Image (cartoon, rainbow, N blue to C red; front, side, top):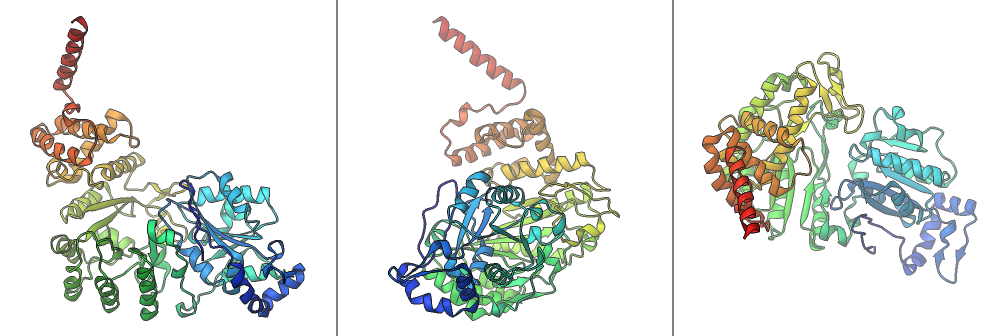
Length: 561
């Protein structure tokens, strides 16, 4: 498998056909496959005995494509599909793009390979852009068979615009069904319906995809891995609530693949298991595997449930060095009534105890999640959850706004709680019977400013002195002051953000301002910005006017001199 250079603005990972020497040795194996043999005969394929190649124009060509949110992401799903294409792998390549790239340029890249079949992975973050690509592709080359798959088209399928211009849709896990569909298309025995439901396949029958990460992926991109599939919990905002249970991959085979990746130089692993610490014995073996291979640049990301950290796991976690672990911990809400509404089981006291233990006894980076807009949640109950979580001292509090994922059971509450969702991606909640649209907008702004200030890590010295024991109220006041001053939640320069924070504290909490200035100077120096801290406008009131007048007088005097 060779490696192709990636365009700096268009991430393309290609898995090309095998080199000529390999094709010569595999030719007889391919022809033995009845499906491919049938296709070759029907297409009138001629084998060139002089070159040992299969003539390109007569070979079936498959492209697996998706649009990632950013370059450093990789498509785990496409690599699973490729790994399970069996003999068709010889005719397939993977193309990955990013959503910022123009649809017409993506189509051009795809058409350069002259494909017969193009499969797209469709997700909530790329549905709009992928729809544009598919529409263009079918206008320019209507003969190409377009196959859609992924969670965003697996539910409410027929009502979606992207489905109307595609040829086939595979719902559910398509690891094996995509291979079968490609074979049927190639053999001119296509299914007689557009939407095809993928049948469940035992995990031991699925080929693992890890060898298809390229050297470029290993060096510069995030590698997704999974030790299990499914989730035993039934939280209704999540598609994983549809799973009946969590099923592990065979551990020895999984760790063998991790060893191969590690030996190739992989050091950045993101586990996508919904409940990584569900089976503690398995968790311990995986953690020990990586601890035994610890290097300065090894980084592991896990999603864990916070109320299930037994002593032996804690003892192991405490051994990992700083910078090696990140835990994504879903709290969502501490309100027991809201938890009951969404079928979420969580021991709140144990969760808070474990969050504090992780913060005090490990070097793990703690990323904790809250969701605003859940059925039954109010402004005040959410404020209480935020305050409780803040005092557990996670490094980040990710404030998500409830989204209506297609297929998720949350829609059963639509009428009883008057849930009103955005009809356009990302299908975020707009209002409920407890939360008005204007309040929802206030929280949206709070979340945006919290990302810039609270989660960015740039204000680690100043932030604790800006907030009191009621951090939600304090930060909401800062949020509204800055928004009223600027009207912006995006495109605020870092230098300007420092000024606005200082000005807001002076206006809102003047008794704190002098101490905050001292701390914010430490934060400013850590940014390595070229401008001097003394040149910042740190005052919102009369001092600002006085400073401005003094500067104006100095300029006038210099001019007169």
